[in-house]
Length: 250
Image 1 (tube, rainbow, N blue to C red):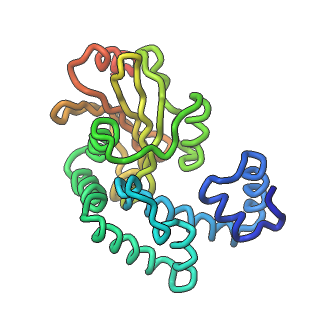
Image 2 (image 1 turned 60 degrees about the vertical axis):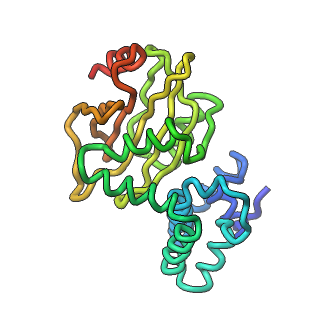
């Protein structure tokens, strides 16, 4: 049970999703009436998302106490939080050997080339190659929607792909130059995977007309709404993918 007003430890537990539902609602209501503390917590959440995206595959390495988010936040708080966060992420990327740094840079470069290229790249990294671990493993469809709503309050609802035989199984937070993004992985009984990707609009607030495009063995069906860009990514020329696109009416 958290204390009220909450301690700094309680706030860190809120950012790291370590509170039960009752305590999380209680602390959320308290933050709503304390805007200064709420702004500080939002900054911590943004730092945590950026660290998670930058680390990527490094999260699968043996635990290192120096990379614990709480330790990093304390170090940042003592000395110009945002400046040291950037330095810490750069140091981590170099020490790991460039794997996670390459992933983040590749997604940024590829995104500028064609609509929702970062959604296709995220599918390859997560659904196909398994290089980035899931942030959330689904226990129910409602649970997945609740997880997504924590970060994208105005976004469209998760697409219902049950008609095509797909159910959501996991979610992963990512980072873009314009803000946080997320990919939800769906799977059918045959083990085929598709993804739903949501991100802020691109540079100059670019929204997308409804459309589709292929990239190698993958296809992205994309659209915009509610202040975000979306894509459903699936393998091309498979019965499961054809049924999926029929259900999405693309």
